[in-house]
Length: 207
Image 1 (cartoon, rainbow, N blue to C red):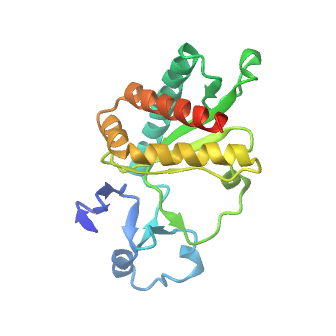
Image 2 (cartoon, rainbow, N blue to C red):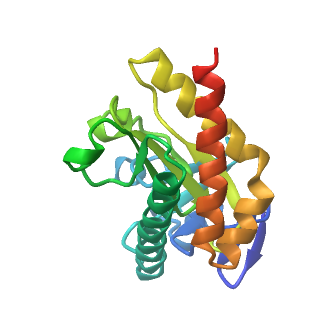
């Protein structure tokens, strides 16, 4: 881990300033128990290695999150146009498909800040994902470096296979994803996602 201006790089991924290493936090607040209940929901783990205290109300983090949401909206809009032009039966985005799109498979690609796991299990329905729409979380450092793709389990074996294979496909192109995010090119990223969707759907349907 490398520190720079109160922000931290882990595996070349720049974390938002909302994350403070637990050891640094403990030095700043020596009278508070890091194992106490008030911190239980704020502890995050990066790849089972480094513990951080997370402040989700940090203004800088909120600004980064809103920028990610705006990028995601543009990304899905561009991807939708590409899917339509290529006659791929997939609809991209979080909105409910209209009447002409209901026969299409919905997918949603969400660009988000880095993912650090909570030590407290999240039992909310949000984390179970959708058994209808395929949701993909694309996590990037604040420096644009791609970290990982997350998706969720499904009761449908077919849907689960598609989700897993698309995530694996994107992992192979992590340097391209980093480039497109760093240079703010949602159109280039959408083209890569189109290739992933076409490749995996052809592969699964051909089996």
